[in-house]
Image (cartoon, rainbow, N blue to C red; front, top):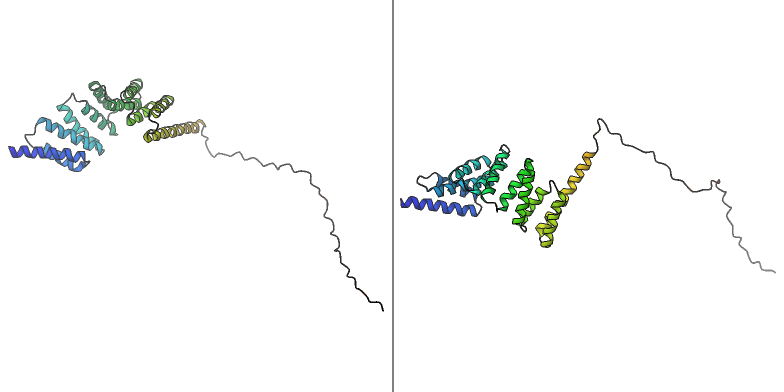
Length: 254
């Protein structure tokens, strides 16, 4: 029994260490082995499922992530973190039900209403779906109030608010730069935001012109010769004869 406990504790310790170091393959191997052992406590089994879900989520394996996170959420239905992770796994999958992801995000906010990360995730998805735009914008504004100096939160808020109100997004960025004028991340965010606004304006201007069927004839204009000043048109004159220099000779008189 003691040997089994030592093995379980060692696998859990190694799994946590590998995951902290970013060694996802080694961490997944430890957690998978631990989950297959008999007699593992419910807490460790839930931790193994959660860790495997996080690893597969980071690696873009959303179906596997949903399977592990659903198992973890079944054991702990009141966990806001598990609802948030499961919603992210559903949203990331192209075949996932985005409204179901929105439901899990909303449940995570109900359990932890003061978490800016949950509010941002819910707000961006709500604005993207278009069904709850007002609720999504309110969630983003609430996230900004809770973390006004967090660059990642500011970036997400500007991304969401900028979809419907570019002036408000510009005001948020300007206020953040006023508080942190030397922050290079905010400066880059400011430049990217203006580039994105210009790109949107150019696309709108391009679509403003109706498309013509068939070949497009360019309006060539015949060039007009510029007015020339008065120029004499006299025939060329005959050149003058060359002037010969007559040499004078001195004669001696006898």
